[in-house]
Length: 212
Image (cartoon, rainbow, N blue to C red; front, side, top):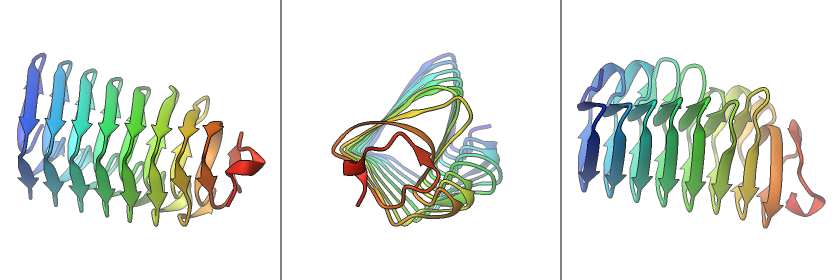
């Protein structure tokens, strides 16, 4: 657990650091369990896991990631870049590029958790459900996000929203993604304002003004 760092029931701050070519069952770069994790100005690349969280796995904890890059990380199951399970995850001014997962969440997998994303970019991420982001039964908020060029084999090239889930979407671009169902978004959206969505197929809750 935690190919680079494993932190349990504690407080961990990581700044200006690089995590590269680490591997583990869960949390290729960092595994945070029931604690507080703050990551700033850091790079996670070419990390891999056999289950969940190619770059970072946050379980039952609180994680904030700012000004960081996740690229070419992979997970055999969930969250090629980051996986968040029963926790709180905030992503600010960060980039997720070319991460992959075999099941859900090429960039980020969010399971029964709270996810807030602001001023961040997702491109080239891939999986079966949720090329950029897969999120489940709690609300996810995306503000000033750009999701372009991500892909899912089955549903949600940009975002996959699971049953009883929803996302709040504001001032974001979700376009040019690909999937068999819901090329850009699959699921329910609470559209706040200023969004541009390329393909409305598979998504509920958009306004006419949200469409490119």
